[in-house]
Each structure stands twice: as structure tokens, then as C-alpha cells.
Image (cartoon, rainbow, N blue to C red; front, side, top):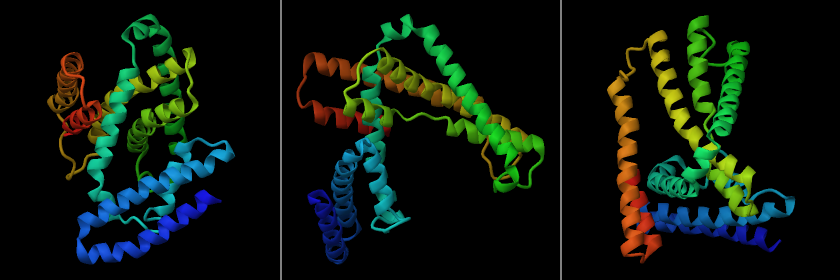
Length: 268
């Protein structure tokens, strides 16, 4: 009850303060205020769902839905756009944390097992999504008036996005539960390796879809562009990794601030 009362106080307090902030300090102060409210609200809702044996990340998601544009409208689309750098920074930090959990030795030792699980999981899910979309394509807006070949291409493109995993959710669950062991390591390895596979799968299906469903507005996706997106990411990641290793070896101070700086530049 105390947590629910705190949440209500936060909500009504923000409703009173935002008009003042808009008039006195402009949109920047308003976005900062709303960001602080979202952090506190997400934490509070996360605590509220724990008695229901739900993970805190479920509460975070519920808080975003509840206070977002679709329900209470406390956060509008303009504020979400202004907070996009925070989103990129958070994703970068999560990616760094997830990558730090990987052990190359373990990957090499269990490579066959990981590939078998990953291939079967992604392939079965991909086929199931494509098949479902084709069965109900008359009810799907972007498939309703298309030929079968085009419907297959567009369904494949949709499925290539839908099979994306979420390292953020996996890390949140593992951190909250304190889970350790072979299942945990295998799950985390599959989720991280799957991200690389999904990028390749999406690039391939996007190329096929653009060839089958021509569009005057679609920009050409050259092999060079794909190679730069993948190869450039490897180069930038290697440089950042080398910088982190040198910093940890010779400096090892203000690690949180250093992580934020590296994440920001890596994201950019």
C-alpha cells in the first residue's frame, strides 16, 4: 500500500509540476523531469509486482505502458523522441554488460550444442511466423492485397524482425534471480549469438523483399553497405574493447563514468 501511495503521489506531483516547468524552463527541463518520474515509477511498479511472483522487469514494462501515450498519456511522443539518446545509452550499456558475460572458451567448447539449439529455435520460429502470417494474410494490412510470392517475401521480412531476442530481458531476469549454471550460460550465449545471426538474416530477407516487391521510395541496399554495417561494427567494437582493456589495466578509476562515456561514443 505504501508503494502504491508513493506511485500516486509521484503521478499527481508530476501533473502539477509539468505546467510550471513548461512555462519557466522549456521542453528540456520537462523531459528531464519526466525521465526522473519514469525511473521512479518503473522502480515502484516493479516492486508492486514482486508479491505476484512476477519479475521486476514486468513492472517496468507495465509502467511504460501505463504512463505512456497509449493509456494515461503522462509521456507524449515528443518527450519519447527527446529521450532517445537515453535509450541508446541504455542499450549500449546492456550490450557491454552482456558481452562481458561471454566466455570465448565456453563458446568454443559448446559451439556445436549452441549452433544446434540456435538453428532449430530460430528456424522453427521463423517458419511458424511466416506460416501463420500466410494463413491469416487477408486480415494483415500489409499482406491483404499482395500476390503469394510477395506475401511470402514480406512475411519473411516480418519474421526476420520478430525472431529478435532481448539481451536486456535475459540479463534482467538472471540478475534478479541470481541464476548461475550451465542453463544460464547456454541461454545467455544463445541470446547474444542470435543477435548477430538475426542481423544477417534481416539483411538477406530485406534484399529479397526489395527485389520481389519493388518500390520507388525504397533506398537501394548494396552489398557494400551491408558489409560496412557488419565489418564496421566489428572494427569499432574491437577499438572500444582495446580502449576498455587499456583503461582497466593502467587507470581503473571512475569506472562508472568511463563506462558511460564509452557507451555513448560507441552508440554514436
